[in-house]
Length: 113
Length: 116
Image (cartoon, rainbow over all chains, first blue to last red; front, side):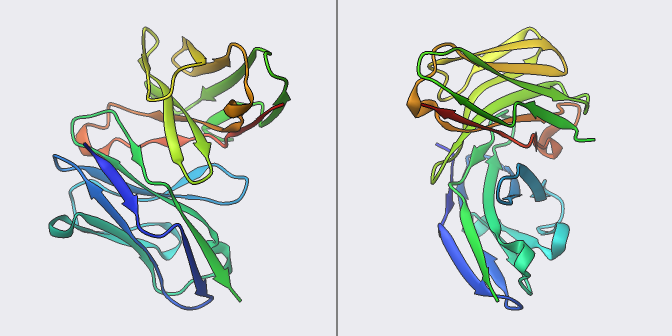
């Protein structure tokens, strides 16, 4: 069965330090992979997506993620956190040839001044 | 203007009442979805529709029904609301013309529902 695991439910970083949000997936076939961000009282906004082109994907607001097939991972990173990055982040996988988007349980990022 | 809109944005209702949540999109997408979000559980799929005549149950459809009135409109109904349906509800769309791996979901702003 396909699944998505976000390894940390909460992550705290200081402003200006790197961000790492971890995501592992299981999928039978080459999947599409996404990261969405949800700011408080807002909807989900697409940060970036992997669709079998380059394995290093750049998204909005300085975020990027690397698809590592051998590790079945799609971790989200940012070199320097900003206060406005405080939000909840969702890793999502869509197995190839399916309609189904499988959501992780989310990682809440806190940025400390 | 937002591409995917939801009304109402907030709703308080009582147990046993029937309510409808509405979703409209101007993206021209054929697929539409309803999800609910509960703390610590991520998003769970309630119903999805591939076009006006194709509606399918998701993983948690009990207690819910939907109507796809047009390609651009997809409504979610709670026939008799109960407190454990208190949640944040999201509508999403996607476009199957983006073949294969490029298909992406786009979300509305959400409806926060409280059932007393």
